[in-house]
Structure formats: C-alpha cells, structure tokens
Image (cartoon, rainbow over all chains, first blue to last red):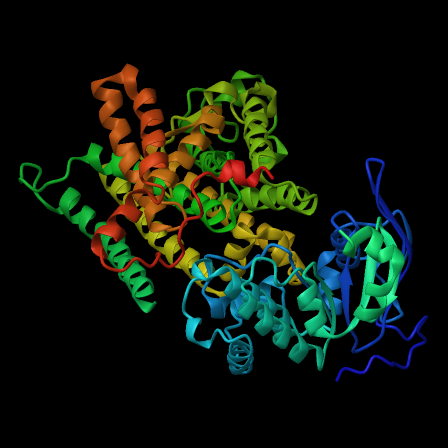
Length: 256
Length: 381
C-alpha cells in the first residue's frame, strides 16, 4: 500500500538494505559481514541457531546497537547507523521483542493507544485527548488481534500468547512500513502458533515484515523466503525447501 | 474495570474536601473561637500542621517522579530547600533596619562579615513578586539543567539516585560556606514580616496554614491532571518498560525532563511555604537524610497514588513529633523499622491497605498500581 518510490534519488529501491555489517562486543564478533536486502512489501523469515546474530541484527536496524562497519539503509536514503531508536521508530520501523514487552499496568486498549500513530511530543500528549479517529484505530486493531473482549483488562493479566498478540497489535497501531518480529511464537501452544501465523500473513498484505523464528513448522506455515544466519553472516537464502536441502545449513542447524 | 477508577476519583474528591475544608475550618477554630473553648485550636498545633502540609506537598512532588516515572530522586530536599532559601531571602530583606546592625540594605550576617554591598544574587529580593518567581524558577532551572544531562545520557536507576543525592550534598556544602553568601551554617532566620504581616502572629501563622493546605489541593489537582492525561500514561509506560517506549518513537528524555521540572517547582513552592512557618532555613535542609525521609513518607503512604504520598508525609511526621518527644533516642529505629515493615507487608502503602479494605471483592488492581516493590534492584539493570 505505501509506495516507497519517491522523487528524491535513492541509493537502492529496496526497503531495507544491509551491506557488510559487522558488530563486535568486547572482541566477540556478533555480526561479521552480514548483508541482507528486503524488497518493499516482502515478508522474510530469518532462522539460525542461537548466537547466529539474529537479535543483534534487529538491534542494528532499530538503532539500539551501532555497527562497527557496514551500511544500513532504510528506503534507500535513510542511513540508520546515524539515527537513534526514536528517530528510526519515527521513520516507520516497528519492533516486537523476543520477550513480550507490553505495558503491564495499562489496559489492553491503552497499550494500543500509546502505540497508535499520533504526535509524540510532550505538549501533544499532555493536552490532546484521544481523538475519535484514534479510537477507531484501536477498535480495528483490537478485532484484528482478537482481543476486543479484553480491552479493559490490565495487560499484565493476559496470557502469554495474548501478550504476544497485543504486542503485535501495538506494532500495527504504530503503522510502520517495516515490522521486525522477534520469535513471535516462543512458548505458544500449537493452536496459538497457527493463529499467529495467520495473523502475520494478514499483516504482511500491507506491511513489510521480518520474522525471526526458531520454530520450523511455523516458518513453513508462513511460506515465505527464508534467510539462514550462522555466526553473524548469511549462510543461505531461498525457500524453506531450498535452504533445508543445503548441505551447510543441515550441518550447522537443521541436522542437529 | 471502571470501579477502581471511580473509587480513586472518589478518594480524590474526599482528599480535596479535606484539604480545602481544613483551609477554611482551621482559621475559624484557631482565631474566631474564644481561647478557652473546647474546640479552640492552640497556635502551636496550627504551626505544626502547617509544617506537615508543606511536607505533604513535597511528598506529592516526589511521588510524581518516583511513583509515576520511576525516577527515584534522593535529592528532592534540594528543590524544597532552594524554594525555602528564595523565600528566606525575601524575609531577610524585609527585616531592614530592625536588625541588630540596623543596616537598611544588608542583612545582619553580611554586616558581620564586613561586606559593603549586596551580592548580585540578593538583588530584587525586597520584592515579594520577584521572590515568588525565584521560588519556582531556581528549583525549576536546576532540575532542567540536571535532567537535561542526566536523562539525555540515559542515567537511570541507582546511578541516577546517587547523583541526585550528590547534588543535594554538594548544595549543602556550598551553602555552609560563609562566602557563598547565604548566611553560612546559621542560614537565614530572625524574620519579622511577610507582606507587612508579622510572621510570628497567630493570624499570619493560620493564614500560612490555609495557603499551604490550598496549595496542597491545587498541586494534587495539577498532578492528577498530568498523570491522567495521555502524557501520564506514557510516563507510567516509561516507568515500567523504558526501552519499549523508545522503540515506539517517544522521546523518553523529554518526558522525564518535563515531569522532573514540574516536580521540582512544586517542591520549591512547598519549601517557600515552609520557611515562614518554621522561621528558619539553614543548610541542614539540604541534608541527604531529609530527602531520604521524604522517600519513606511516599513509600509508607503508597507510591504512585499521589494522595497516599501526602497521607504518608503527615502520618510519618506526626509519629516523628510524638516519638522525638516521648523516646527521642529511638526515632530513627522506629523510622527504619517502619520502612522495612511497609516494604515487606504493605507494598502499596497505607492507601493500598485502605483501598483493599474498601473493595475486598474486586481483585482488580487500583487505577495505577504501584510497580513491584523493589525498584532499586529493578532499576539497576
């Protein structure tokens, strides 16, 4: 839905462009020359064993960690290595954390309200009430994430799966161009996992999504292009069947 | 779901009725009734409660930053004392020729130190309006400068608490020095008039009590409006999951800075009301122990409830007055014990207990439940 081709010249037509990104923490190389290109509107699954650099990659994209070397561009013209978390969020990059982090002392609908796209300055939030349009957005999202019945409950009292959905709902409310979703089905029942896959496919219709996940059944259900990370670099890329057939992938990951 | 909110609002109205009622009733009891009437209020009680009410305003200010934004300030006494000094400077300039050295411009301590001219910092303090502005401006500016650097550098948790403590300690040392120009260790005292009224008189004392009570009511309304707005919701979100708020695109440092400055201004006003009622301000007010005591008031009353903070300040100080009279050597043990007991058994303070009593059937949490008790460890991440 959102067109990314703009009048001003861009370096690349991709939505997200990572080239040769390296990050090290106290000598430990979390990312070593990671390159990844995401087309506008694409949904991508990222898999890889523990320590492959999946979360670090998310940190680099969202501005939490600055890479030592390499380029990170959003929409071909925003150099993400020069921006902080807030600026990157304002550009339209939303992130769901591995551990569900919702605002436990707020109600479900207030969680969505805080995430909803609206002016974020102190002045605006201090004096502006919840607009009718915002209320509409909240209702729409609550029904998408199937938490309409729970709108008045404190988020802290939701089940694990519901918290995960609420966080996805918060992402939707932000209406970002790119959603980064870190292990959305960790700790979910099979039924919840299936429902989450359906939810993400629904979201991917009008958003670009990057999903990091361990659960192979879930990745298969998503049915999208897969990137396999290993030791901070891309090991293989393609459909799940292609990468599952790759000798090196079997060796480092799937074979175990 | 709506029950806890209405309950808290009902409590809010009760609180406003109590504070405004006290502001009206106390002058009647203290001044209008004949002195031998059973209901007559002795002047010392008025002065004592006037002091408690100022502490309650300070507690409210502290709860605004600690209870709602998770900023555990161990230096809020500094803002209180700065407001107090600004008022004290006005009161000093009012003494005029009635001082021991009868110098029309210079307060006694400056004459004693052989100073010839009024320091720049003291200019303008003969005017009540100017002093009133300074009461708010000085604490506000200090909070702004401090918060600007601290929140931008993302100093949080215990580290921030330690810096706030260092801030108030540094001010204490500075104000202790005679050449700093604020009366050294004697501070400012021997006040005569405020706006032409004798500060010692019962009528002035009573008026100051009423003004303090009304200020408490007004501070509550302001704070409640802040925490009930969308801004307040974001503030609570910052308290509970700061980095999540950042990833949602909020400028967390600005959110913290605003509430910190508002809180410092309220604390400054509390200090300014306090000084004419107790008749002295000295560097001892900057003592870190004072700021820590204020944290205990908030914890005892109920963190993150505003009303609880004010209640805690009054209850603890009432106990302090009693204890320091009856068993002076045990007060600190009692205070320490109280803090431990409240942390262990009453994580939501006295107000939490009252609310639980009033609604035994609804297991839902109050409107803004206090965060899990141990904030220091949590914040230390």
